[in-house]
Amino acid sequence: MIDTHVHLGQLVREDPGLKPSQVLRWMDRHGIEKAIVMAVEVPEELDFFATTKEMLRITRPHRDRLLPLCATDPRHRYPGRFDPYPILAHYMDQGCVGYGENLCGLPVDDPMQQRVYEACDRLKLAVVMHFDHWINRDKPGLKGFEKMLATYRNVRFVGHAQYFWREISGEINSGVRYPGGPVVRGGRIEKLFKKYPNLYADLSAGSGYTAITRDPEFGLGFLKRWKHRLMFATDIIHTRPMKFCSIKGKPPMLAYLETANLSVDAFERITRKNAEKVFRI
Image (cartoon, rainbow, N blue to C red; front, side, top):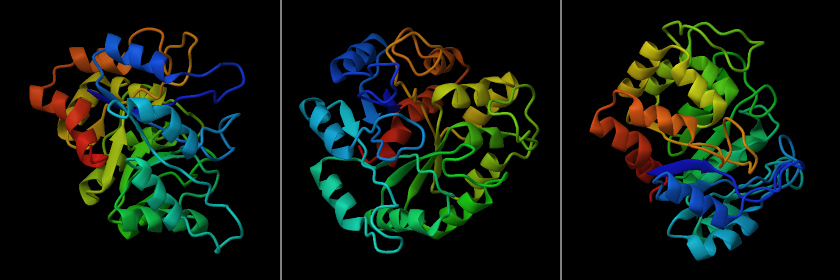
């Protein structure tokens, strides 16, 4: 299996963060062969950075299993003057397999963000996108994000986090980060999946798990319908026990996938084959 959303290093003040050796032991316990490692180079969500250069350095001895992504802050220098292409091209030459995590506190379709998307489009990269009330902010319905999907067709956008996964339902409460209960048919995620072949999603953290399990019958059907667009992921970041995002215990999403009524083909696509395609592993 491939976990498509993992963090290394200290990112929050109250937790020392994860070392490669800790993550590798955790992967071994749960049958995970490889992991996609996020870079964090913006200040919005976390206390500390995990720079691309640092992720390249600490994963280098384990590059057969730990595959880093690259990132940059689109607000570098002056608006309109920053060209991320040569920087990202260099990072790819050094061993990165995509771009992420995009945690920038700008509208998802901001012109500065689009400079990064343009570079990723030229390089034909996957981009892991976090959506919440501030990061990659967008109106309900993800209209701004849809414009990016339509414009940058060579980018394989990977949707993630609360304000992405709430769109699994056709009815959303804008004040609820982790909505529960029955899913109303006609959610924007399925509409975007149908229209844009460059959209994928990772099933990480509480947002992905809640979206799939809040309405068990719908969630299982969603996995089966979109088995070619979904990827197993955890978003592990903490050493201390937590229900989600911790190396303590079995990831809830993995436990769910292993016991869900999925075909062998669906399970293999979600836990490995889609990641191989999206990140060109």
